Amino acid sequence: MYRQMPVILCSFIVVLACKEPPAPLPPDLGPRSSEDKEGETEGAKSSATKPSTDNVTGTPSGASLPAPASALPTSPAPKPAPSNNSSGSGGIAGALNGVFDFFRNLGNNQNNGGAQPASPAPSPQPAPSPQPAPSPQPSPSPQPSGSPLGASGIQFNAPGNAKYQISTYGNTLQTNKNRLTSLADAAGASLEEKMLIVAIGMQETTYMKSDERDGGKDGTPSANLSYLNINLDMAQMLGYQRNDGGAYLNDPNHLGDAVALLIKAFRTWGVDRTLNFMRGGRTAFNDGTSYGASDYRNSIATIYARLSQDQSLLNDGRRVEVNLYRV
Image (tube, rainbow, N blue to C red; front, side, top):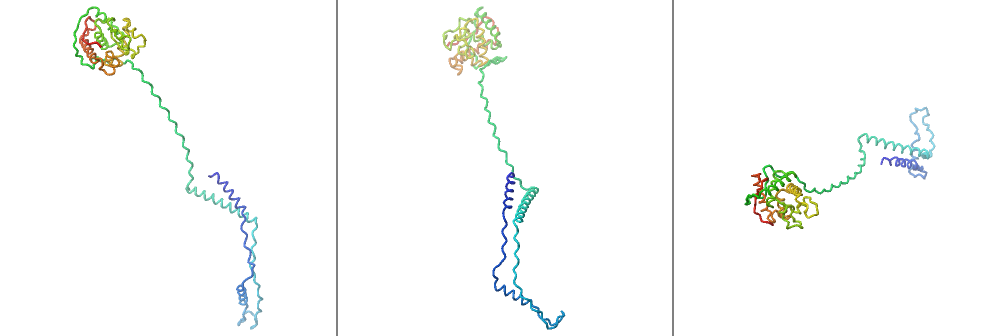
């Protein structure tokens, strides 16, 4: 707005300078009325000097002054019309005075705290576009953790009250038992994990020999691997990648790999779910009851309790026997 004011004022001054003032009215030259004439005659008559009774002027008494001649009526002389030059100068001067008065008043208003035109508000800046949230990363597959078994033993989801007996099977069982415990130690098993593995070997076999493996399910996902009878599906979930139906783990020379997978299962799923998987596959792993999973857990819990009470059973030729039906 302030940028346009000089242009507006200049235009205003030019218009005022170029505008001519109105012409003066001409004098009244028309015939006068009879009333005006009578007024003038009466004035002339009243202006004649009457003879005075007292001679104070030195004029002979009784002599009268001659009557004055009647004066012709005169009209006021017309005023000369102002020239164009003087009218133009006066218009420019008046316009300039008006401009000066305008700026003087504007300065006074500003000094007296006059309202200032509000400056335009800054245009709003666009808000930053939201950054896309990072996509969730898939959770890693379960890894073995530290041993879940405490120094005072483990807690089974089973009472551990199955009927059992202790039988002696001599040097064969003792030799195979000592080999199994040595492989468990080599795989980093704790004492509790080692007793769990021995309890499973006692439940699944009599002498802990490789030819005692249950091969009735070979060629299926439920095939048993090694004499510990680890489920093939279970082994694959734990990372077994050989496409041989488990033949590698069935080799007696690779019993240590089967022991390592069993330890990994304990540390990944816990004892109960591992035992459920061994007994009834993935179905029992999920529900905890199919294929007699609860009886199997109770049998292992019973053998484990006896090994905890008498750890010499880990190295000699005796076996803790629980009569459990096969599935």
